[in-house]
Image 1 (cartoon, rainbow, N blue to C red):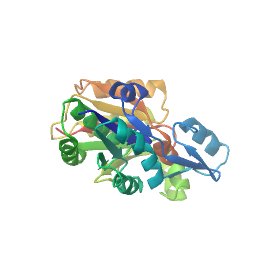
Image 2 (image 1 turned 60 degrees about the vertical axis):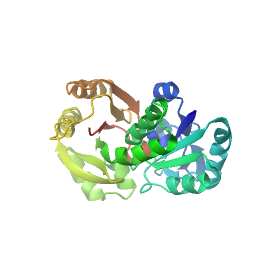
Image 3 (image 1 turned 90 degrees about the vertical axis):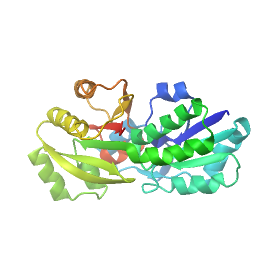
Image 4 (image 1 turned 135 degrees about the vertical axis):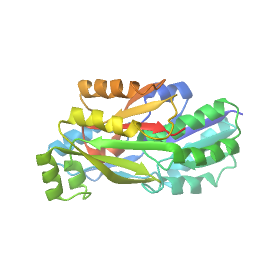
Length: 279
């Protein structure tokens, strides 16, 4: 079967991976100063950083409407035998709900809740594309992905809390205390939701290495075929050290990707994560 895999722009896959697997990307909306822009098309993370640095309010994100998804699925459903769309976690956005309602208009469109975001969602997208290449049916792919989503491990370490403070996700006092003590919180995605876990203390580059070692030194097997290092504009030195640390755990492919507007708009610059698959 000729299957097209599509995803919300929140999957944070690189252009190279998108092109290699022929993945269709549907941009979410970003709200800046009362005006809507398309993630990765009309607005980019650098625009958000500059806006906030100049004293602007945090940029919000908005889900695609049912109509947006119908517009996306209509030509694809005619061109391909089937379309499989992978959404950002339904706990983070109404995208999944809207995509499901849109899919009811088609007999060959299937919608998957990634239960994740960023390249955690990207793992689900790539898995769908690889299964399609193996000749699996849409039903087989969707059934496999239900189990697969539970094995994606996604987390990030933050260098700054001002975006979280402005977004109401931590108090000003907590943010000030964290800055004074050089605390770098680790945010983990579990069961489709985010929560803070361990806090690291010290310089950011040292904390990144310690964080990666903690996340990968686990008592269960990890799939070695691919791992993501996804970040929102860390320095080349921090990126290189992070990749070096991840590679020391024996992964076959370490993909470095840049976080899109959704992650950047909530966490700000200098956020980095390691995202892998439990075997």
